[in-house]
Length: 394
Image 1: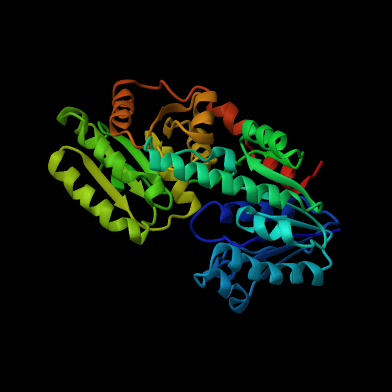
Image 2: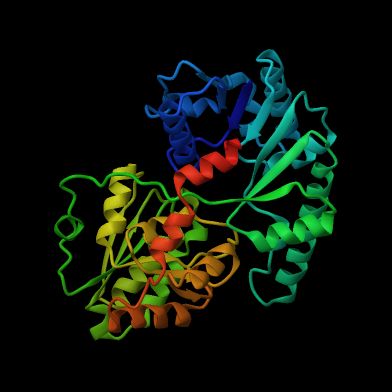
């Protein structure tokens, strides 16, 4: 049997790289007669960890010419249609028995209209039932209604293809049940969002590196720092802390900052320094390796997942749970549901700076209150469980 695994978002930011790395490692450690062909975006070729020594695995890449439509500014429908033609050619040339798409979302129109040469499964990151208004305004409600209807139609359209056998959705049984019942299908199924076990960076002591005294609690925001990560509202919330509370707090922001977000972030940062000079703020604006990421999480006190306009699963809560660190999480979507189910921390409205401030005050005043069921969460979301479910291994 030959399986093609396609991912077009393998970069040094985001979780796609981690998924590919761990699948490769698992397949190397668990040899089989099945052949695997990893078809990845051109950028992945330059990432040293995208490699394998297993004889039953090949790693190939779209050429720059094949991938140009995806970066050309064309509409998502047109660009994915063009890229899909190349993808199907690879699947056909390699005589694949099965295609696994690591991100199905942008290919829904195309799959619904295509003749697939083999059985296909894949992961959907943003299912339509999780679309909710960004705020309580009429305009936001109208926009979300239109977006939800459009996403629902394209999902129904995708499901018309009889060769599409399974669509995996991270950590969200409720949404899976809703979609299967509404669309009259059984194609949607559960996939545990994995908690990966990386080593920590030897010699990295963040309190020493940033000169953070033991009296201060470290509130960590990390990843690709864009509007979704909501650092601007976190800073505005910290402006509302008392002078004494601010003197016991440090905001540590670790990750590459999206260029379009930089100006807004800088403005609020300067405002925060003026209003609350007692507060310590540290930035590490670059991509950090996996072992560094583990060190930052393990040595912080509270991890922020108080995101805005984001309703899907996030690997950040798994990292926090792995190191038994409480979270301040968005109350909406999968992240909010999991935080409450496993009692991993407090949930807030990411737009509401008062709620964020009150959550910070709680952790400043209380020791070891959360998380309560972090070990259970980690056990239920193991890397092996994710891979065996995705690859449909017994």
